[in-house]
Every structure is written in C-alpha cells, then in structure tokens.
Length: 258
Image 1: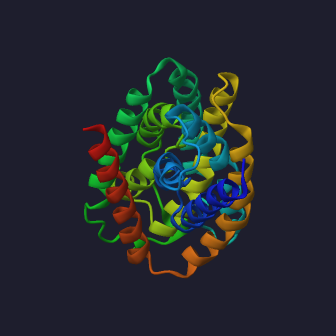
Image 2: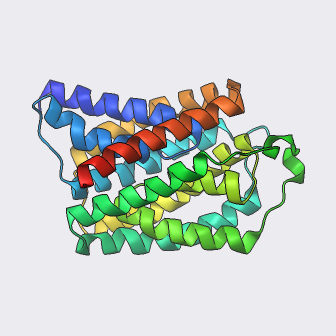
Image 3: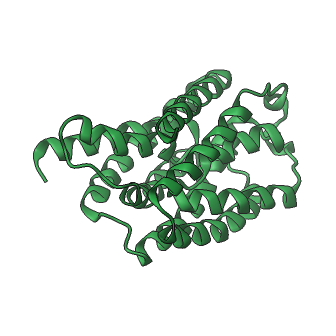
C-alpha cells in the first residue's frame, strides 16, 4: 500500500462523503464507480466489484453518523419515517448483503445499474409544493413507506450501497416528504440500512479492511461538512445536483454493462 494509493482512497472517501452529507445519501452512488475505476486509471491496484461493495457498505455506516449528527437539531429528523423505513430496510439490506456472496460481479453491476436507472427517472419527475408543508405537519403512508424500504434494502444490500440514492427519490416523489426532511431522515435510515449490509458483508468476508479504514477516516471529516453546506443551499439546487449525479453514474454503469 503506497502513499499514492492512500491519498487516492482518502480523496475518493472525502469527496463522496461530503456529497453524502449535503444530499442525504450514503455516498455509494458516487464512491462505487470511483473506487471501481479511479485506482486503475492511475496505475494503482484495482478492486473487484465484491471488494468495492464491502468497502462501500462499512464506509457508509460511518459517513451517515456524521451527517445525522449535523442534522440533529431543527426538526428535520422525522422519527416515524425513520422507524418504519429504517426497520424495513434493515431486514432487506441484511438479506441482500448476505446473499450477494452468491452473485457474480456482472450480476452485482447489473443490480446497481437497474437501481440507479429507476432513481434517475424519479429525480426528474416534477416535485411541486412539497417544501410548502411545515415540517411538523408532514404525513405519509407508513406501510407504503415500509414496503418500498424493504425492496430497496434487498437491492441496496447486494451492491453495498445502503440505498439512499433510491430512498431519496421515493421520499420526494412518492411519499411527498419536504426536501430538507428527506435529506436528514434518509441519512438516519441509511445508517440503519448500512448496519444490515455491513454485517452481511463482514460475515461473508467481502471487506478489504485497510482501504475501508482510510475511507472511514475521510467520511468522519467530510460528511458533517457536507451536511452543514446542504443546510444553507436552496432545496431546488440540492434536487438538481442529486438528479445529475445519479443520471451521470447510471449512464457510466450502463455503458460498461452493455
């Protein structure tokens, strides 16, 4: 493990975690392709898809802790939403994380591409009036939320992504949750999801611990900084940034798959 490798992994973790805290996602939508493609681009050791998903899963666990801590005040965390979606996604992510050991690398990339495609489509659906509802008056269908979270958890557990990149569009478009509450609550739900995915990856030996440790250090620094930046940004800008990131990553993954 040379110095160039350590710096590259740290920067990948820092950039991904900063965006994670800002947009309410675990960051794997960004870090998955970065870990897969950037090290070989600089002549460094390449990770397999299984290694990338393992590193992503454990890193998301720590990145979301920092983000939730930054959003703990202000009424942004919806406890009912976190309990219903968090419980369902925990079950699903453990099933997906454990079962991913049985899948090929091409299968993992295909699942990731499908999830990202649906997330991209939903992010471009107009979201009118969702930010006009006061945070203390937000209501949603609890069982619909739990059902979606279970499905997302299974798929996300397979790719080690915790699922926030798909949860955020569902919360905005289907459940009609205001943008800042979506960002804060999705970080908490993603933290719960990452527990199941991480346990599944650890028990099946899919984690390369040294690069994972570097990513964790980067995320503990960057995620709270991103969350503080996200609180100051216009909600429409936050939605556009997330939509563009998901769309770009979806395009790159599907080009490689096809």
